[in-house]
Image 1 (cartoon, rainbow, N blue to C red):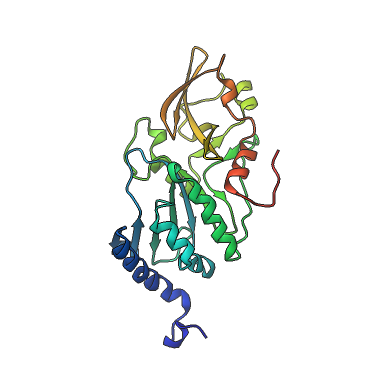
Image 2 (cartoon, rainbow, N blue to C red):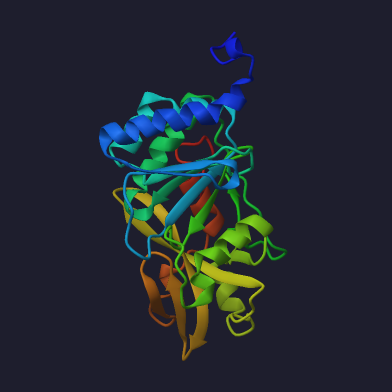
Amino acid sequence: MGIFDIFGKSNKDNYYDHLLNLYSNISHIHNLQYRQYSIYGGVFQVMARYGPSPWPGIKVHTPLSDKIYNVLTDQNFQDIIIHGEIDGIKIFKVHSHKQVTFYISFHYILGYKKLLDIFRKHKIEVKVELDHDNNGNVLLNRMYISKDIFVRYSTDFNDRKKDPPKADDSKWRDAEEYWKPKILAVRKSYLLKHLYNLNYKDNSHIITFLTLKDYNGLIVPIPNIILSLSSNKLITYNIYKGITEYDLSTEVDYISDNPENRLRAFLGQNSRETFL
C-alpha cells in the first residue's frame, strides 16, 4: 500500500497535487520561474528560463503515468531542471495524451539525452515509431519515442505569430493535435526529382527537408520549411536560424537524403536500433 492509498484515493488522483507542491517548493528554493493557472482544471509550469523570440526546440508530450511520475520525482531529473539542462516542464491536472510537456530548446538539446536516460532508468522503453505519407516521406506531426510518449518540433516556445505563417508554432501545434496540416520531411532524392512539381503554397501540407546541426557531438536534424523556389534557389524557413536560401547548384549536399534514419538516431539516443 502506497502513501496515497492510505487516504482512500488512487495514486493518479494525487500525482498532480503532489507534483504541484514539490515543484512549487523547488522553484522557490532554486529561483526557478513558476506559474500556476486555474484553466483546464489546473496547470502549472516550471521554467529554468524564458528565451528570446523565436525560441525553437522540441517538446516531449506524455500522459502522467506511474512511470512518468517516478521520472518527475527522481532527484536526477530535478537536478536537470534546477541546473537548467532543459528549459522546463508543464503539467495539467486533467488527464490527456499530453498532460506533461518537457520543453527542450536547441541550445540545451543535450538535456534530451539525459531525459531519455532517466526514462530508461524507470523502465520506459524508448522505441522510435515514425509515420509516413504515401510516398514514403516522414511525417513530423507526432514522432513517437515510446508507447504513449511523442516528440514534436516547436518553431517558438513563445508561440508568437510569425511570417511566414507556416513557421507559426500554432500551425505545428494544430498539425500535432489534428494531423492537419501534414508536415513532411522529404528525402533529397525525392525533392530533386519533384522539385518543380511540388506545391509549396499548399496550406494542407508543410514541406520540409532536414539539415544537420552538431551540438557538442549530438547531431540534431533541423527542419527547413520550403517557402518557394526561385532561380535554382530554395527559399526556406530554417526553424533554428530563420529565413535561409540554399543554392541547389552548390549547397544541395546540406539536404539530408535519409531523414528517417537521422530522426531515429536523434530521437532514440542510445537505443538498440542501428542506423545506416
